[in-house]
Amino acid sequence: MESVKLNDRLRESEERYQHLVHMLPDGLIIFCEGYIVFANRSSLSMLGVSRLDEIIGHPINKFVHPDFLELFPVNINYLIRDANPSKLINYKMLRLNLESFEVELRAVEVMYDGKQAVQLIIRDISNRIRMEASMHEKDFLYKSLMENVVAGVFVGQKRNIVYANPYLGEMFGYSEEELLTISPNDLMAKEDLKRIQNEVMQSMANGIIQFPLKFKGKRKDGSYIYVEGNSSIIMVDGLPSLLGTVQDVTFKREKEKLLRDSAKLYQKMIKFVPEPIVISDEGIIVYANKLALELIGLEEESQVINKSIFEFIHPSMHNATLETVDNIMSSDDATPFQERIIVRPGGQFMDVEISSIRINDYMGKDVMLSVIRDLTDRKRSEEVLIRSEKLSVIGQLAAGVAHEIRNPLTALKGFTQLLSAKYPEQPHYFTIMANEIDRITLIVNEFMTLAKPHFTQFNNEPLEPILQSVLSILETQAILLNVELKVCFDDTRPMLYCNADQLKQVFLNLIKNALESMPQGGEVIISVTTMEDGNVHILVKDGGIGIPADLIKKIGEPFVTTKEKGTGLGIMISTRIIEAHKGTLRLSSVINEGTVVEIILPVQAVNMA
Image (cartoon, rainbow, N blue to C red; front, top):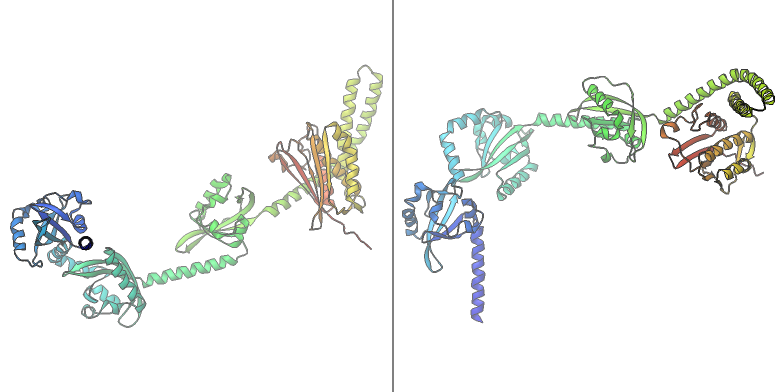
């Protein structure tokens, strides 16, 4: 039992020894009878190998430089003759890729697996050798370069400055001699001192030899400057030292601060401008104020920042927008407002107008500032005005023409009836003539309706009886066309201040259109709902053939119709009637799915007294 415990302790001791050996920063190799039998991790890295099998079992001579190979056994014997491992010699060795490097070599005689062996302790001094050679061979060039470079150069070692060029002295207000008598700590603000020390220690611990320097410098007169540069950890006289090159960036910092303050001022001004504002840099959005986000239909600024402006502009206008951007960035003048179509989230389009101008030095860049205005209301007003003007023109035309047409129509109709009686053998032609004369008469009557400057007297009327009377008229036609009329009233039973006959004409036109749009049958749904906004919403929905998108905007203009023999005056007259009742009439349609007509009319308050 004691033997087992002893073996366990020996094994643990051996594992600890191997761990310590592998953690050594110096390379450690054991060779026996000329062949390598052990190597720690540092030696693997030093010799440029990654696995033990690339070195174990190989002759030690494979890694000795040819110039030193002949004397290698003699040198080893010299080293192991004295048991003191501090004795060393400088040597040259080879990596696996045959690259040579300088080392300090120590050797002691050890027992390995019961055999006499040699343990080599290897330290790579290539960097130090190169630095020493460079320092000695190029001393004049180095000194000339350091003393004339337009940057402060220093070497710090053990919290002392061991070298400083004239530029560094001028930067901090010291002479070169004075700098060599003070610590680098005297040149830094206290708040930066600890940070720089930690950065140096962490870099050394992590094997990082180069890192940036940035600190607040303290001049001899007590004033402060901002310093930036780079530093490297080097070996000087066998000791780690810090080589640094720094510049006074106080002016740069002040300019950056001025730019930041200017940008903040810009943003503050833009934020409170009562217009949607977007700032872009080479077509990429860098700022959008709250009104712009609301216009586009977004909530967070992050949803537009770093995105292209072309993501929010209709593709048909990309070329024109790109040309405008090029013109803006080559001019100091603002562009006139230009109409564009914005694509909102979800694919909705919005008509806007945009004016842009170049702004110089916004965060150090030339950018484009764009002011956006929503044209939706203006477009709607323009459409209403155009429609009103068209109605006015039609009304004036009707007033002058209808009277002149009616008299000839009366004569034509009378003579057609006489001729049909005289020539009864040809009734077909006279029937066609009579029908067409009736059609002309109908059109003239509709013209006369448009020509009337005012509607008849208005009264408070319940809406439900008005609709029901129209439905009773059209019920027979609906049955013939295999269409079901469905009516949905809410419980409010609204009263309207209206002309009942005119509203009947509107409902007759709309429901008749719905029936005629479904030659294959179906259903027409009429719904009436009183809303909290004080208006009654009347919907007439069919499942007919629908209206094309390019035509839906023109419906309501004279002679724009989907019917083969229609005049387009029905919707025009209906729209005029609804507008005279202080309401609105809107159409929406999907091809092969149907059309929805929405009428909004103000509800008349009922006096309960």
